Length: 197
Image (tube, rainbow, N blue to C red; front, top):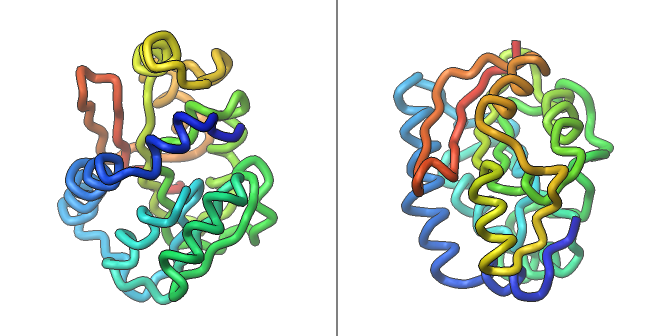
């Protein structure tokens, strides 16, 4: 599902970049450090990379290969213009067309609340990870999605509303082990570190 014009603007402004760097990325880095997990020299995926800022942050981990993709061509055009040294392409997280067991790690920064088939998106990312691969995922629960849809007019489909219990259950049912999780912003935003079994 593509962003509406208002949400596209909000996802491409300095405040969003500040939050990604100082809250979301910092949380993920803390998770990796706590478990002595290094992405240096690894093959890493940024699923739903938007305009590429999250991919640029991930590049700080010094992976051997880092690629980002997004459903919206306009976002990928921005990413390629801003970060020409990185690899980006247009693709759907429900059908990445990427090799099975290819990546050592995958990042998913807040896209699943846009996807009615969010469970299938998790399964697709799982498929692309190597056994023992790392998933770092952050998203909104149904309370936060409902708030943004009601008061800020974001287009968050109700099929993508989930509780943290439902979300965690599906991660584990898919085959992930949840190593870490935390909640921020009145528990509406959750961050997870998972391993592919």
